[in-house]
Amino acid sequence: MDQVTYEPGNGTRYILLVSTENRLGPEFGEVPIVLIWVNPLCGPSRAGVFSRNNYLHYTYLQEKMQITSIADTAAILAFLRTYGISVGMPSVNLTGGKYASN
Image 1: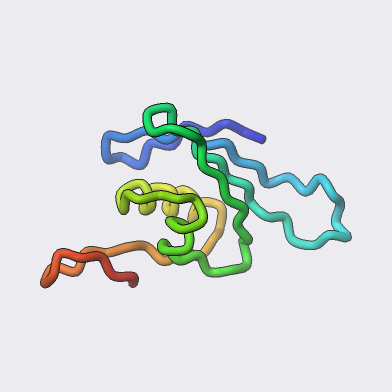
Image 2 (image 1 turned 60 degrees about the horizontal axis):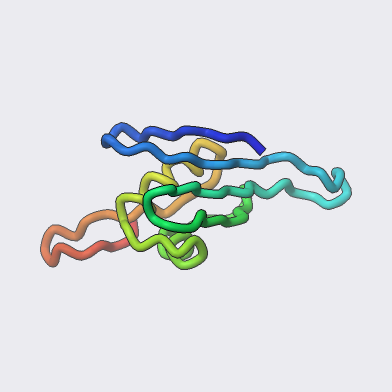
């Protein structure tokens, strides 16, 4: 497992632990990405296991990793995108000020 400090360019810094190793061998198929977000300011770390072959919508990431901030969700999705995961990013709906998927 590697520790990565991810800085998406918006003045924030994310400490992420990432594993992309297949420790079970090739007979077990696809190697998932294990992601742990170490957030010392906001309580316990949050973790998720994600497939490279599936589409990852931002609401799924929020639910599984218990992330309430859209900004944090978007940053972590941008990070996962660098690993080849297809993601659905949140976007602002300017008419109502709410978020909608794209």
